[in-house]
Structures are given as structure tokens and as C-alpha cells.
Length: 250
Image: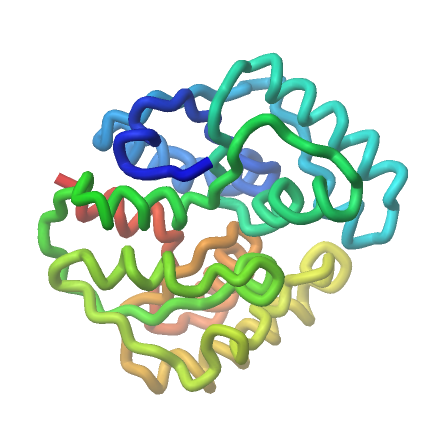
């Protein structure tokens, strides 16, 4: 499906929030909905019917369990009669766009987009108008969105389009970006180690850039990096890209 700003605005979109955001990051969900409403996006939610995409099961190698989960998820989405599924979770996006069709053999009669892709299309079609915000930022490439799905430029293009936002790159970016420390279930099993890895990354890679904020497109990265910044009193804000766009949209 070739998507442009007009086709997106004429489509029925399911906003898939993802488990991590539903349980831990309600403010990111609110920012995303704020963006949809400002842009006139025709979106719906599954509410209590939204389950888990099964990404963690896939990471653990529990393929049979992941497939049962995926079949239920796809059936629920089909019943909702949507054209596009949009998520701001890197893990959910990888599960839907790569793992379901390629590893589990499940085809889906709807398009799947990460929020950064949708925003990039609308930005290129001049469907977004921004107020200037003065902010110097760097961008963290989530493993599951970057190395696993090849999405590097879309988030950067959106950030660069916002007047007043200055994007500064770390020397460890795109394919060379270091993991936040939480990937592969490390945060769940070894939270202290996970946060120490994030602290090391922030202190050695991010703070020397003298930025105001770090922006990412993954709720797990967001949580781990923001925990590290808060727990160690580092002079840095951590944002999901939806929050930055919500701040700037007219």
C-alpha cells in the first residue's frame, strides 16, 4: 500500500499502544493521541481488547506461544476493520512488520507503520504545521527499530523539520548506536545492570554533546534512559518523539 498524507487521513487507523506504554507511559500515549487529534487522524483504540504482540515471547524463542498470541492479535485487529496499524513501540512494530509474516507465516490485511514513519509521511506532504521550540537534541536509535528494521532517517527528518530544534548526532548513531541496556529482556531480569549501562551511555556519549534532551522511539529505551538520568541526577531530559511533536504542532 502506497501511503501519502491524503491516504493516511482517509484511512481508519488503529493506534496500537503496546504493553509497556499502556502500563508505564500513559503520558506518551496522551501525547500521541494529542498529535492524532491535532492532525485530524481518524483513529481508534482496542481498549481492553488490546493484548500483547508477543515480541518478548519471540525474543525468548517461544515460537509456538508467540504464534498463538499473534493469531489472536491479528484476529482482533481484523475485527476492528482498520486499514493501518500505527504503533510507537519499536518492539511491536518489529513483531508486526517482520516477525509475523517472515517468522510466523502470518499475513495481515492491513498496513503497519511506526509512528515515526507516519509523521514523516505527513511532514513530507506538508500536513503538519509547527510552532518553533528551542531545543538542542540528540536521537537514540532503538535496536529493534534501527538495526532490526532499518528505520533511521524518518525520526531524524521529523525532528529536523521542527523550527528551533537542533539535532546533534553522537558518533555512535544509526547502525553503530549502542543499546540502551534494556534490550532482550535485560531490564526485566537485571534492572540494575540495565540502568548502569544506560548511565554509562548517557555520561560518555550524550552529555558531552551538551544537548538539552535525548529523543527516542521506543518505550523500553525511554524508560531505561530516563530512569538512569533521574536516578543519577543527570542534566538531561528524555522524550519520546510523540512528545516533541505534540509540543510543536500548531
